[in-house]
Length: 259
Ligand SMILES: Nc1nc2c(ncn2[C@@H]2O[C@H](COP(=O)(O)OP(=O)(O)OP(=O)(O)O)[C@@H](O)[C@H]2O)c(=O)[nH]1
Ligand SMILES: [Mg+2]
Image (cartoon, rainbow, N blue to C red; front, side, top):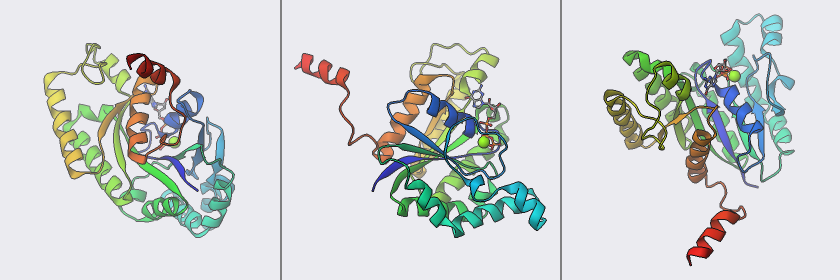
């Protein structure tokens, strides 16, 4: 069995859950199922195909075992890996053509300091998933050079640790542009125009990320379907999603006319 999807990672508040929700609500030529892997979350806006909290949740661990929030989270993720059969059973209910998003917790120690998420990624691959990691970085980090660079380096280190096809995504770009009144007729995917220094800086970082070979640096705003389509297109290509889908009628008609 072959499944396709994304492991959505990134720091707290970077927009992981909102991204999953928008993708599930929208129409992006696929049926999207979301798996919640955050045992600490109170409210989930999307319809969950699998929810880790049915196996274990952080508040119970803190109450019953006396752990703090971070130790408790590590315990929960370890528990999930030890009980992977449970996850495997839940995933068996997902149809083969469904596209699965894994909404992960925001504590980046899980990716960079301990190899728990790498094991989880391996389990998914063994379970038949062709999956990429998508690391969301809040574009507002760009306000501060040191913060931005450290954000991207964290993305690099987490992506390398996971050993999956990887994408680093600057998120909330539209709001950022609005706040800074950039001219919106631009070069990035024909949408945005940046100041010259900004463009140069991101281009250099993008080259660095691409040269290291662990994934492209892309832009996203969940309020902009075109930016989501662009991102999905890149990821589809990397994980080879859609190779088995029916051809697009419009594209077919157009090609036929050209012939
Ligand atoms: N303008 C704008 N706001 C966004 C975007 N994505 C997320 N947000 C907002 O950012 C905030 C945090 O979003 P979440 O989706 O909860 O972030 P998260 O990464 O799941 O956070 P944790 O689960 O705590 O790690 C929310 O208030 C969202 O409404 C975006 O693309 N544009
Ligand atoms: Mg979240």
